[in-house]
Each structure stands twice: as C-alpha cells, then as structure tokens.
Image (cartoon, rainbow over the protein chains, first blue to last red):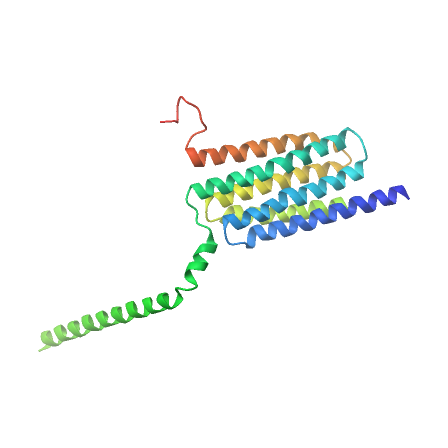
Length: 144
Length: 92
C-alpha cells in the first residue's frame, strides 16, 4: 500500500515536471523575442526541474542521494532566476529591443506606412517611366 | 516507468533547445538556450542514474549544475564588458 502510494506520488510529480518541460521548450522555439523566451526558460528551470527532482526524492526515500538531489533542487531554484535575470539585463544593456513596442508603434501608424510605399512606388514608377520615355526618345533620335 | 518517459521527454526538449541554439537571431538567445540545455542535462543525468540503478550519478549532476551557472555568467560577462575582469590583459 505504501509502496503504491509512493509510486503514484512520484509518478504524478514527474508527470507534472515533464509537462512543464515540454511547454517550456515549445515556448523556447515559438516565442518571438529574447525577453519572451526568458519566460519559457524560467519555466524549464524552476517548474520542470523542481517537480522532477521532487519526484525522484519521493521515489528514493530519505538517504544521502535524496539529500544531494535536494541540494541540486535548491541550487537550481536559486541560481537559474539569477542567470535569466542577468541575460535580460545584459541584452537590454547591449541594445536588444523588445518586440512588443514595435507592434504598439506600428498599429496607429499603419495608414502612414501604407501611404508611404505607394507614394514612393508611384514616384519610382514615374521616374522609371520618365527614364523610359527619355530612353525611348533617345533611341528614336538615334533611329532618326 | 515514469522515469523512462521523463528521459525521453528530456531528449525531445534538448533537441528543441538545440534548434533554438542553431537559429537564434541574437547571441542572447543562444546563451539562454545553452542554459536550458544545461538544466535538461542535469535532469537527464539524474534520471539516467535512477533508471540504471546507480543513483551515484547525482554527484555528477551537482557538479554540472555549478559549472552551468558559472559558465553562463562568464559568457555574459564577456559579452557585456569584453573581458573576464582581470586587470592585466584585457581591461584596456
């Protein structure tokens, strides 16, 4: 009875950790920016690692190995937020722009952006047409 | 049984983090993905020890946790200041 309870508890904890790992690495691929991917890596480092180590500790019982596992868990729980915070700080200091501000800026300015390329395009087309007519005129002169 | 599933999930997550390391646009994406790979390898070493019946592999995982933390900070310090902080060579 006790063995079955320990197996169920450790399996449940490891399953929660595996789900957190999969969600975190999916976010690491899918999210658009460094500052967004930090959230996914934080989920891998804290939720996934903590739950899997908790499951292994429950499976092992109280011994030296479980003390070492708890040491790994405490170390990861305190150092990986520091590491991701340092990544965010250095990325901000080196001038990486978050992607959300560009979206907010682009949303009201959309008609201006729309008008810009059409004007430029028409001007380019006009200049191309002008050069085309000049070239055709020059070729016509040469022909004549 | 559940630990074998967790090992397979660690392998899948490691491949996904390796994809982000290969095609990350900036260097900080790569640092972040390498940090995640280090955490996944710590979990994988511990789970491998439990699955194979030799839980002494936890010592190696503990060592790897410390090395992962220090390595991430060393790379970030090189990015931000250009040196590792020694006064003799690289501070000029």
